[in-house]
Length: 385
Image 1 (cartoon, one colour):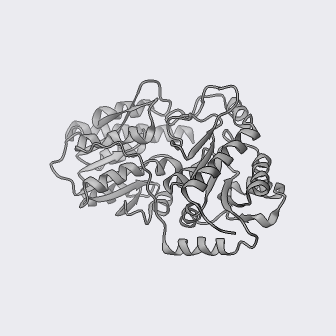
Image 2 (spheres, helix red, strand yellow):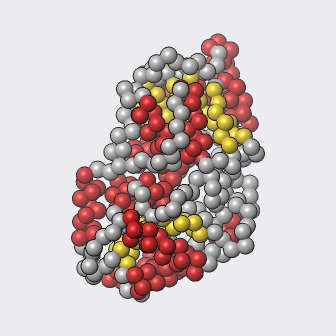
Image 3 (tube, one colour):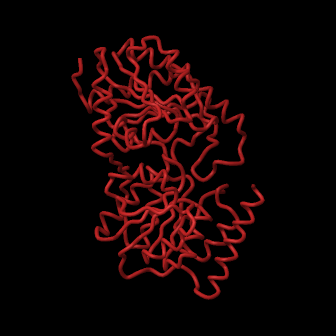
């Protein structure tokens, strides 16, 4: 499979080089923009952190049609009802390049270093293709074919030690759009809103706060013990009259179940795992605090201005995690060097990453959760009892 992937990359690169011989580079700045393609690379959290780019385009080019390309199975439900996207194209579908051509876009922006996505956009004949060039260090995710492809497109400097949501906004500067606004933007449907209200209405016992906890990580290198999450829940239930919403997807069922079994007062727990992405957004928007390792739903909470507790483990605390007074970071003891960064997710000691994640102290997470509840009390006072 790895050999096949390499062969496919080489074929794409050859196609790009042949196109360059006859058509030149994709570096022409358009005089006007009616259609623009944006590829938010990465997983759920990365896509949420790319919404400032979409919002800036919408604000500065209100008449432009924004086409989001990439993984539409993720992009469509996550970005729907945000008013940031007009059309979706799945770049994994056969004929995706031809479909993009039909829009006649003047510009395409790729938010992360993706050789495949960038090459497909170049082959679609888009006059201006913009993608990042990593500066300030070595980026393992920047492959050799991608470095060659950069000569055929317009790049923007992504500072490796910078705050990634701000760095991505540099992609717009070639279009005359300059902004520092890294506010994340999401929305959800009326149906999801009703479903979230229904779930909350089914809570029987009196409570003061609703705290969402995601015990799963989607990555064993970030995983903290589900039993420790349960201990956090037990403390918050006993001391602060908290009702716990268990958050997670199908891949998190084992961790979610392990946590729920270890929570002492089952009447103060609601299982919301395996809901749709639309419902997940609506549910998280109703929380007072959200607690998890650095994983996708944490960024959904940030987008809805919900106080968060981010158990960082081996993750770089400064390149993307939620920033600001209401967002609490829990650092691993001993100050180990971060092993997982935005453009460096490979070629590291996996066992060491797991050790760092597991080393996070329970008392530190509880302290951060209590601080986040204070933020919720100040910013969103709610009388529920």
